[in-house]
Image (spheres, rainbow, N blue to C red):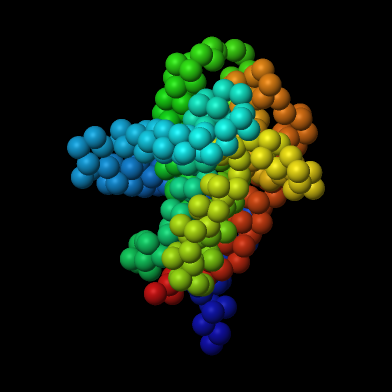
Length: 283
């Protein structure tokens, strides 16, 4: 008797078997409620031991903006961009979304080993929940960012509404990032030790604290590379929308961000899906 054929004829499937890609997407979407609740529980657990609780999610980027803004403001001198304080606030608050999606996404499988090995569900739910967690954290942070910007003399205008589609594209991009690093750390757990270095690299090279045009004026070829830098383009668009004035951007920046978001999401999810059967063996 062919046992696998008999099992299949009765609607049974192999435990941990990888479904087709679109079936996998559907199964992951069906678990979206679990992903949301899981994300909310992670936020509560992370802040439960702190007296200030979730306020630390706002205080940490605030302190970073003050510290890095002061240091880099002094170092740059007259090469600082206009409205430097607001420039730094937007950069520091928005880079947090990428940094946390990458670092926490990288641990989404290896950090939930018991869950992965004991229950049958699409493992993509875990990195997906990480991005949801960051979205839930980032929304109030955006509100605080706007308050800081207004305190620095920039008043609301209709272009601020365009932060919503920009944030949506940024979330799609970061989902792809989370999927990529979630699988990479399963194969090479030592990669988690390098994540702080990778995070710092992107923090200091994405134009968070300086104007690329001012600092790299002598290297126009490098500036051209930044035209296709996804995080830099997100920050450039955000500053143009919120600050206006001299903070202009090429409308093609939207196409660059959209291309990176869709492309990395597809690559990340397919890359993650192809190793679905391996995650239950994570050690």
